[in-house]
Image (cartoon, helix red, strand yellow):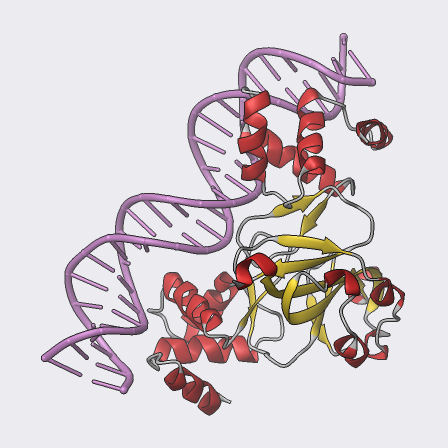
Length: 137
Length: 137
DNA sequence: CTAAATGCAAAATTTTTGCAGTCCC
DNA sequence: GGGACTGCAAAAATTTTGCATTTAG
Protein backbone atom coordinates (compact mmCIF):
# COMPACT_ATOMS: atom_id res chain seq x y z
CA UNK A 1 0.00 0.00 0.00
CA UNK A 2 2.80 2.39 0.91
CA UNK A 3 4.60 1.13 -2.17
CA UNK A 4 1.69 2.16 -4.33
CA UNK A 5 1.61 5.54 -2.66
CA UNK A 6 5.30 6.12 -3.29
CA UNK A 7 4.84 5.31 -6.93
CA UNK A 8 1.90 7.68 -7.19
CA UNK A 9 4.03 10.42 -5.64
CA UNK A 10 6.84 9.87 -8.12
CA UNK A 11 4.41 9.89 -10.97
CA UNK A 12 3.09 13.23 -9.73
CA UNK A 13 6.59 14.64 -9.21
CA UNK A 14 6.13 14.83 -5.49
CA UNK A 15 9.11 14.19 -3.28
CA UNK A 16 8.75 11.19 -1.06
CA UNK A 17 9.55 12.55 2.38
CA UNK A 18 9.38 10.89 5.74
CA UNK A 19 6.59 13.25 6.84
CA UNK A 20 4.47 12.66 3.76
CA UNK A 21 4.78 8.92 4.14
CA UNK A 22 3.73 9.06 7.77
CA UNK A 23 0.82 11.41 7.09
CA UNK A 24 -0.41 9.11 4.38
CA UNK A 25 0.10 5.97 6.41
CA UNK A 26 -1.79 7.39 9.36
CA UNK A 27 -4.66 8.51 7.15
CA UNK A 28 -4.82 5.21 5.32
CA UNK A 29 -4.94 3.28 8.56
CA UNK A 30 -7.68 5.46 10.02
CA UNK A 31 -11.23 4.33 9.79
CA UNK A 32 -12.63 7.60 11.14
CA UNK A 33 -11.99 10.11 8.33
CA UNK A 34 -9.71 12.27 10.47
CA UNK A 35 -9.10 16.00 10.41
CA UNK A 36 -5.63 17.57 10.18
CA UNK A 37 -5.68 18.11 13.90
CA UNK A 38 -6.60 14.49 14.61
CA UNK A 39 -3.76 13.29 12.41
CA UNK A 40 -1.39 15.66 14.18
CA UNK A 41 -2.33 14.28 17.58
CA UNK A 42 -1.52 10.78 16.38
CA UNK A 43 1.57 11.59 14.37
CA UNK A 44 3.36 13.63 17.00
CA UNK A 45 3.72 10.44 19.03
CA UNK A 46 5.94 8.87 16.39
CA UNK A 47 7.37 12.04 14.86
CA UNK A 48 7.76 14.52 17.71
CA UNK A 49 9.07 17.25 15.42
CA UNK A 50 6.33 17.20 12.80
CA UNK A 51 4.33 20.41 12.65
CA UNK A 52 0.64 20.92 12.04
CA UNK A 53 1.21 23.08 8.99
CA UNK A 54 3.23 20.31 7.37
CA UNK A 55 0.20 18.10 7.75
CA UNK A 56 -2.06 20.75 6.25
CA UNK A 57 0.34 21.14 3.35
CA UNK A 58 0.69 17.42 2.83
CA UNK A 59 -3.07 16.93 2.81
CA UNK A 60 -3.64 19.81 0.41
CA UNK A 61 -0.95 18.48 -1.91
CA UNK A 62 -2.27 14.93 -1.82
CA UNK A 63 -5.75 16.15 -2.53
CA UNK A 64 -4.63 18.26 -5.47
CA UNK A 65 -3.07 15.17 -6.99
CA UNK A 66 -6.08 13.03 -6.20
CA UNK A 67 -4.21 10.74 -3.86
CA UNK A 68 -6.73 11.36 -1.09
CA UNK A 69 -10.18 12.95 -0.82
CA UNK A 70 -11.50 15.77 1.26
CA UNK A 71 -14.77 14.55 2.70
CA UNK A 72 -17.89 16.66 2.37
CA UNK A 73 -19.15 17.56 5.83
CA UNK A 74 -21.26 20.21 7.43
CA UNK A 75 -18.85 20.71 10.26
CA UNK A 76 -16.20 23.40 10.37
CA UNK A 77 -13.23 21.04 10.38
CA UNK A 78 -12.09 19.49 7.12
CA UNK A 79 -11.88 15.71 7.15
CA UNK A 80 -10.01 13.39 4.84
CA UNK A 81 -9.86 9.82 3.62
CA UNK A 82 -7.33 7.79 1.69
CA UNK A 83 -9.82 5.31 0.28
CA UNK A 84 -10.22 6.21 -3.38
CA UNK A 85 -12.49 3.38 -4.56
CA UNK A 86 -16.05 4.47 -5.31
CA UNK A 87 -18.04 4.44 -2.07
CA UNK A 88 -20.54 6.46 -0.09
CA UNK A 89 -21.00 7.86 3.40
CA UNK A 90 -23.49 7.49 6.19
CA UNK A 91 -23.10 10.23 8.78
CA UNK A 92 -24.44 10.01 12.32
CA UNK A 93 -26.05 13.31 13.34
CA UNK A 94 -25.27 12.66 16.97
CA UNK A 95 -21.65 11.47 17.14
CA UNK A 96 -20.55 12.63 13.70
CA UNK A 97 -19.08 9.25 12.78
CA UNK A 98 -18.80 8.69 9.05
CA UNK A 99 -19.33 5.13 7.86
CA UNK A 100 -18.33 3.97 4.38
CA UNK A 101 -20.57 1.78 2.28
CA UNK A 102 -20.88 0.63 -1.30
CA UNK A 103 -24.03 0.91 -3.40
CA UNK A 104 -23.88 -0.62 -6.86
CA UNK A 105 -27.49 0.20 -7.63
CA UNK A 106 -26.75 3.88 -7.16
CA UNK A 107 -23.44 3.76 -8.99
CA UNK A 108 -25.13 2.32 -12.05
CA UNK A 109 -28.01 4.80 -12.12
CA UNK A 110 -28.09 7.47 -14.78
CA UNK A 111 -28.28 11.05 -13.58
CA UNK A 112 -31.70 12.62 -14.12
CA UNK A 113 -32.57 14.31 -17.39
CA UNK A 114 -32.90 17.56 -15.53
CA UNK A 115 -29.10 17.63 -15.37
CA UNK A 116 -28.47 16.97 -19.02
CA UNK A 117 -27.45 20.52 -19.79
CA UNK A 118 -25.56 21.07 -16.56
CA UNK A 119 -22.07 20.05 -17.63
CA UNK A 120 -19.74 17.09 -17.18
CA UNK A 121 -20.39 14.86 -14.17
CA UNK A 122 -17.20 13.33 -12.81
CA UNK A 123 -18.29 11.95 -9.48
CA UNK A 124 -21.55 10.81 -8.06
CA UNK A 125 -21.99 10.17 -4.37
CA UNK A 126 -24.66 9.44 -1.85
CA UNK A 127 -24.64 10.94 1.62
CA UNK A 128 -27.00 9.49 4.18
CA UNK A 129 -27.75 11.15 7.45
CA UNK A 130 -29.24 9.51 10.47
CA UNK A 131 -28.53 8.04 13.85
CA UNK A 132 -26.09 5.19 14.15
CA UNK A 133 -26.79 2.06 16.16
CA UNK A 134 -24.58 3.08 19.04
CA UNK A 135 -26.24 6.50 19.39
CA UNK A 136 -29.81 5.29 19.08
CA UNK A 137 -29.84 3.84 22.58
CA UNK B 1 -43.19 32.69 2.51
CA UNK B 2 -42.12 35.09 5.22
CA UNK B 3 -45.43 34.40 6.87
CA UNK B 4 -44.67 30.70 6.98
CA UNK B 5 -41.27 31.42 8.43
CA UNK B 6 -42.73 33.59 11.17
CA UNK B 7 -45.12 30.85 12.11
CA UNK B 8 -42.33 28.32 12.21
CA UNK B 9 -40.39 30.64 14.52
CA UNK B 10 -43.30 31.01 16.89
CA UNK B 11 -43.83 27.29 16.92
CA UNK B 12 -40.18 26.86 17.86
CA UNK B 13 -40.37 29.60 20.54
CA UNK B 14 -37.99 31.80 18.63
CA UNK B 15 -38.52 35.53 18.78
CA UNK B 16 -39.32 37.11 15.47
CA UNK B 17 -36.78 39.88 15.21
CA UNK B 18 -36.06 42.24 12.36
CA UNK B 19 -32.58 40.77 11.90
CA UNK B 20 -33.79 37.18 11.79
CA UNK B 21 -36.44 38.04 9.25
CA UNK B 22 -33.92 39.75 7.02
CA UNK B 23 -31.36 36.96 7.33
CA UNK B 24 -33.98 34.45 6.38
CA UNK B 25 -35.37 36.53 3.54
CA UNK B 26 -31.93 37.06 2.06
CA UNK B 27 -31.12 33.36 2.30
CA UNK B 28 -34.47 32.31 0.82
CA UNK B 29 -34.01 34.67 -2.11
CA UNK B 30 -30.48 33.47 -2.84
CA UNK B 31 -29.90 30.88 -5.46
CA UNK B 32 -26.23 30.47 -4.64
CA UNK B 33 -26.23 28.74 -1.25
CA UNK B 34 -24.46 31.62 0.47
CA UNK B 35 -22.05 31.64 3.40
CA UNK B 36 -22.51 33.80 6.49
CA UNK B 37 -20.05 36.27 5.04
CA UNK B 38 -21.90 36.48 1.74
CA UNK B 39 -25.17 37.13 3.54
CA UNK B 40 -23.48 39.80 5.62
CA UNK B 41 -22.21 41.61 2.53
CA UNK B 42 -25.73 41.72 1.17
CA UNK B 43 -27.55 42.49 4.38
CA UNK B 44 -25.39 45.36 5.50
CA UNK B 45 -26.73 47.34 2.56
CA UNK B 46 -30.24 47.30 3.97
CA UNK B 47 -29.39 46.93 7.67
CA UNK B 48 -26.19 48.92 8.19
CA UNK B 49 -25.99 48.02 11.88
CA UNK B 50 -26.34 44.26 11.59
CA UNK B 51 -23.28 42.36 12.74
CA UNK B 52 -21.69 39.24 11.36
CA UNK B 53 -22.05 37.36 14.60
CA UNK B 54 -25.78 37.96 14.60
CA UNK B 55 -25.89 36.26 11.23
CA UNK B 56 -23.85 33.35 12.52
CA UNK B 57 -26.17 33.06 15.49
CA UNK B 58 -29.30 33.33 13.40
CA UNK B 59 -28.09 30.65 10.99
CA UNK B 60 -27.07 28.31 13.79
CA UNK B 61 -30.44 28.79 15.47
CA UNK B 62 -32.40 28.26 12.26
CA UNK B 63 -30.43 25.14 11.53
CA UNK B 64 -30.98 23.72 14.99
CA UNK B 65 -34.72 24.11 14.48
CA UNK B 66 -34.58 22.68 10.97
CA UNK B 67 -35.72 25.89 9.31
CA UNK B 68 -32.68 25.89 7.01
CA UNK B 69 -29.93 23.45 6.06
CA UNK B 70 -26.21 23.65 6.27
CA UNK B 71 -24.92 22.39 2.96
CA UNK B 72 -22.23 19.73 2.86
CA UNK B 73 -19.16 21.13 1.14
CA UNK B 74 -15.47 20.46 1.06
CA UNK B 75 -14.58 24.11 1.34
CA UNK B 76 -13.70 25.83 4.58
CA UNK B 77 -16.67 28.18 4.60
CA UNK B 78 -20.05 26.89 5.70
CA UNK B 79 -22.87 27.44 3.23
CA UNK B 80 -26.60 27.43 3.77
CA UNK B 81 -29.90 27.06 2.00
CA UNK B 82 -33.50 27.76 2.93
CA UNK B 83 -35.00 25.25 0.52
CA UNK B 84 -36.18 22.34 2.62
CA UNK B 85 -37.91 20.19 0.01
CA UNK B 86 -36.02 17.02 -0.87
CA UNK B 87 -33.43 17.81 -3.54
CA UNK B 88 -29.81 17.20 -4.47
CA UNK B 89 -26.69 19.12 -5.40
CA UNK B 90 -24.37 19.28 -8.37
CA UNK B 91 -21.15 21.08 -7.48
CA UNK B 92 -18.80 22.59 -10.05
CA UNK B 93 -15.19 21.79 -9.15
CA UNK B 94 -14.00 24.93 -10.89
CA UNK B 95 -16.29 27.75 -9.78
CA UNK B 96 -17.83 26.05 -6.76
CA UNK B 97 -21.38 26.82 -7.85
CA UNK B 98 -23.96 24.51 -6.30
CA UNK B 99 -26.94 23.65 -8.49
CA UNK B 100 -30.10 22.09 -7.09
CA UNK B 101 -31.87 19.26 -8.83
CA UNK B 102 -34.54 16.68 -8.09
CA UNK B 103 -34.13 12.96 -8.62
CA UNK B 104 -37.19 10.83 -7.97
CA UNK B 105 -35.48 7.63 -9.01
CA UNK B 106 -32.90 8.13 -6.30
CA UNK B 107 -35.41 9.26 -3.70
CA UNK B 108 -37.38 6.08 -4.16
CA UNK B 109 -34.41 3.73 -4.01
CA UNK B 110 -33.92 1.59 -0.95
CA UNK B 111 -30.61 1.90 0.84
CA UNK B 112 -28.31 -1.08 0.30
CA UNK B 113 -28.55 -4.13 2.54
CA UNK B 114 -25.04 -3.41 3.72
CA UNK B 115 -26.52 -0.58 5.79
CA UNK B 116 -29.25 -2.55 7.41
CA UNK B 117 -27.55 -2.72 10.77
CA UNK B 118 -26.21 0.82 10.68
CA UNK B 119 -29.02 2.70 12.36
CA UNK B 120 -31.90 4.97 11.40
CA UNK B 121 -31.56 6.79 8.09
CA UNK B 122 -33.29 10.18 8.14
CA UNK B 123 -31.98 11.80 5.00
CA UNK B 124 -30.62 10.55 1.74
CA UNK B 125 -28.88 12.85 -0.69
CA UNK B 126 -26.88 12.73 -3.86
CA UNK B 127 -23.90 14.98 -4.45
CA UNK B 128 -22.54 15.19 -7.97
CA UNK B 129 -19.24 16.74 -8.78
CA UNK B 130 -18.13 17.90 -12.17
CA UNK B 131 -17.61 20.88 -14.38
CA UNK B 132 -20.54 23.14 -15.13
CA UNK B 133 -21.40 24.34 -18.63
CA UNK B 134 -20.01 27.81 -18.08
CA UNK B 135 -16.67 26.53 -16.80
CA UNK B 136 -16.19 23.86 -19.44
CA UNK B 137 -15.25 26.39 -22.12
C1' DC C 1 23.50 21.01 -6.54
C1' DT C 2 18.84 22.63 -6.85
C1' DA C 3 14.15 22.90 -6.42
C1' DA C 4 10.91 21.40 -3.33
C1' DA C 5 9.55 20.40 1.38
C1' DT C 6 9.82 21.33 6.32
C1' DG C 7 9.48 23.78 10.81
C1' DC C 8 8.78 27.86 13.07
C1' DA C 9 6.34 31.88 13.87
C1' DA C 10 3.15 34.95 12.56
C1' DA C 11 -0.96 36.19 10.01
C1' DA C 12 -5.36 35.39 7.86
C1' DT C 13 -9.81 33.35 7.87
C1' DT C 14 -13.78 31.54 9.89
C1' DT C 15 -16.56 30.88 13.87
C1' DT C 16 -17.72 31.38 18.80
C1' DT C 17 -18.32 33.71 23.24
C1' DG C 18 -18.98 37.26 27.26
C1' DC C 19 -21.29 41.06 28.38
C1' DA C 20 -24.02 45.27 28.47
C1' DG C 21 -27.80 47.16 26.37
C1' DT C 22 -32.16 46.44 23.47
C1' DC C 23 -36.36 44.48 21.97
C1' DC C 24 -40.13 40.93 21.47
C1' DC C 25 -43.88 38.74 23.77
C1' DG D 1 -41.04 43.26 32.98
C1' DG D 2 -38.30 39.41 31.93
C1' DG D 3 -35.95 36.48 29.20
C1' DA D 4 -34.27 36.14 24.62
C1' DC D 5 -31.71 38.63 21.12
C1' DT D 6 -28.33 41.98 19.36
C1' DG D 7 -24.01 44.51 18.73
C1' DC D 8 -19.55 45.16 20.06
C1' DA D 9 -15.23 43.55 21.06
C1' DA D 10 -12.40 40.08 22.07
C1' DA D 11 -11.16 35.23 21.88
C1' DA D 12 -11.08 30.69 19.96
C1' DA D 13 -10.57 27.57 16.32
C1' DT D 14 -9.04 26.46 11.84
C1' DT D 15 -6.19 27.21 7.95
C1' DT D 16 -2.63 29.70 5.28
C1' DT D 17 1.74 32.13 4.46
C1' DG D 18 6.78 34.05 4.62
C1' DC D 19 11.15 32.79 5.39
C1' DA D 20 15.36 30.41 6.75
C1' DT D 21 16.92 25.71 6.82
C1' DT D 22 16.91 20.97 5.44
C1' DT D 23 16.34 17.20 2.29
C1' DA D 24 15.09 14.24 -1.82
C1' DG D 25 16.32 13.33 -6.37
